[in-house]
Length: 602
Image 1 (cartoon, rainbow, N blue to C red):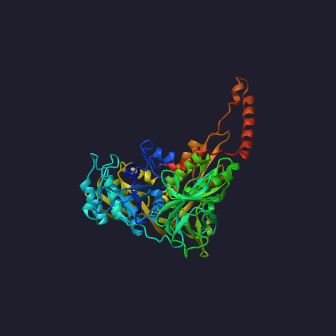
Image 2: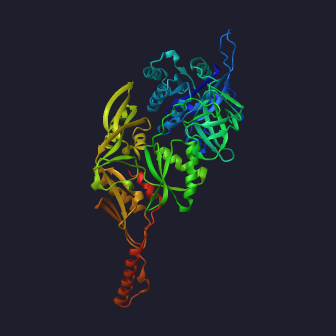
Image 3: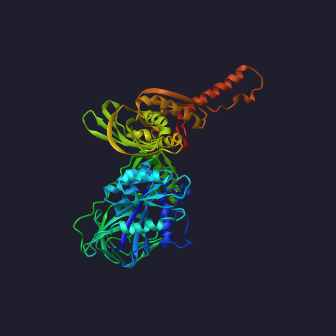
């Protein structure tokens, strides 16, 4: 056990985590030259295309340090690395990786310095008492500011200057010193190989041939192939058909003991039987108590996901269950809509997370879905004192019985250079934000703290922030309780019929403007029918905006060339009667891009 080191890599987006992992795999000989490619751990096509890490990836490396003293024999160390995502929407993946480690490499870009996500991931690691090794990456670049960035890291961590390691993950310079530092500074895992078995499940994947494969860290005890094991929280028992460690592929070893990270295949077919954060133990000699798993992911953004064809409903359910295995932060429950039929109300950690899930459903499971307008959950207090949690505008109680509505607030941290403070403040205050404090971190870089309603940042806040700051501002947030707010339900009516999938909850001050813009956008997108379509925005019974999509007119007078006017009038009257009858039975088809257009309202 004293030769094992478990560590993860944490950093802001694009600070070089996956590239550093590539160099480590190369230097330890885990990946041969033929199998080497850029971002080798990002195995999803989607990750390679977008250049982001979506999933945490566990991998084991063997390393024999060259720099040890002559008196110490150069032992071979087992390094278990978990590469983590950097985007704020995947911070739950980071929390799971941190729970399975004893140390963390904190990577900071020498050209950009400490960013918002660096700070929030660091605090997460410190809460778990991890040993932090600060690493400054991209030191070979012309734009690097190593001394200035070192000062920022010292302010943040309170470490010594010589503790900070400089490297270039691209060229491989300084990576060996990082591997040596992992061996020297990160403590070996604690645990008793002879105690009753205790394993913490931190991830799982679905394999169509072998069932569900669980990834875990052994805290105490030893697991062998053929053991009868129990998952404590679900109470289910299985035979361990195969256990082993995670190299580039799964490598069966027949036995995994305390402190190590491995996988188990036991022919589990039902996705609900494996819970991330569960504890595995032996049936014959169980442990006294389950390990305190990490907290459940709390979804922040809710949206309806509906199959385009109603007969695909069950396929969509099984696809979401399989996806949930691989992405534990996704939650869903069935719901139905008047406009879209049966579907699911899904909870996501953010808008990028929602986009990725939609894309993965399409690519991995061939499911083409319609997604409704995303919204957050609200606490609605009724006049009789009961509390109702509303995730969907359609579930809003009647206005007459509501006492007050509370919406979730967040504490947002924006780190930027002083040149962009004006536009960023205008943006945040325009989103009903309140400035809490502003302080200089170093040089001309500032941190601004705002209290803002979560509902305001859900749709387009992040994109706007990036464009007004030319990509220089970094953004991070955490929840900060609920506050009473003057919210109203905005309905969209098409020919007097309500489309529940387009309903939104919005602040009363923004409702008229938002309703008007929505009507104008729908007017552009709805295809013209053979009758007029009235598009109305309403709050309760009050109509606040209206647009009309004009009918497509058939030229019934084309065959009347000359002749008496009464012949023309007769044909027009006949057409008018037909139009009237059509309007009574006419249904309006709403295309999928109309639902998505609401997200793109500028």
